[in-house]
Amino acid sequence: MADLAQLLHDTMRRRRLTAQALADKTGIRTPRIRVFAQDGATGPIRPTEQELQELALALALPLVTVLDAAGPVPAGATS
Image (cartoon, rainbow, N blue to C red; front, side, top):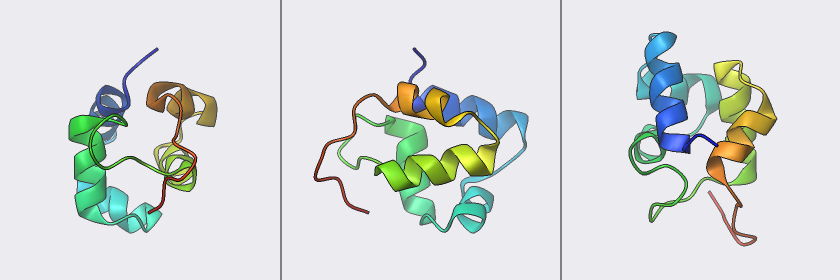
């Protein structure tokens, strides 16, 4: 199981995407994407299931891969 931070870092690098470019594609605020790429899903700011779906779509990754990397999303997670 890959960590979300590593998955984002590797995929963004491979696709030559910055956090700003990914934010433009997803609608997720740039600071949130930077935190996800740095801390993964276990940091103080956790991605919602909707954000994970948007990231998977924008990065052309299977949703199951992104969800697996993020681990369990807390039930009350909000954006």
